[in-house]
Length: 342
Image (tube, rainbow, N blue to C red; front, side):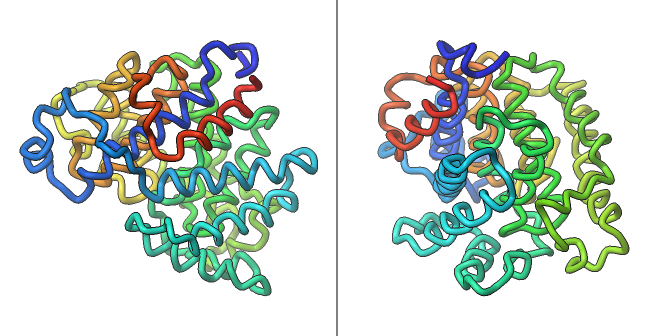
């Protein structure tokens, strides 16, 4: 199934709206434990989208990546050379924007400030010790861009991560996240998703995408590019084990972070976002509420959950009143329309 063949569902628009809705739902609950969230918001199944529906840097950086990819596509098929400059420029512009006031992560701030020095190779700006979830909370557009084959999607997903988060687990988790969005937008049933992600991770385990990453691996002091890649994929395979265990004995009322991690790091954000989606694959609003009522990085977890469940259900998954008042609505809709082929 292609996005354009399923334009009535509009999965790209549903993904981007869901990402922002989840982000806004989790913004007020980040850094709180579950009892505190329940005391502040009431029963989690009744949580409402805040008024006003402000988002965090998660959505802002998703839009920065989306704009960069849109610019890159104007000159032809996506390549490292076409992608690097516009995405780098958008990350730097985000960093310098007065709207960058939503408690962004230190890794993104440090790396983007260094990316602003045009003479500096991007690999020297990358924070190789960081596998924070900032790597993959913004990668959803690469699961939505039309016409990408698996190799270009993977390379581009890893490059957009590596510009800020150069740890191999950040790269692998970003690749997996983009692949999960792509599969779900294309109609993959929820129950098949974990197995497909595991198979993909095993296939990619020793693949180093030199065309996209250059000599990044050397800066990390791994003995080979293959060992650099494997270090990241092995951590992702480990957290997929935890996801599988959680799905064998699902507990929708439990804090999802207890099963798959608090989401501050990339592989845990992916797994916990997937868990909330797979607990409620046909209840988009319930899924993002569960993600927002969690003890970890609630905005990033809910952001990813919203992207996955939005990719499955499209625009119809979200209450119209929520979609109409989410911050950055017009830009989210413009990118969604582009990638839905509408």
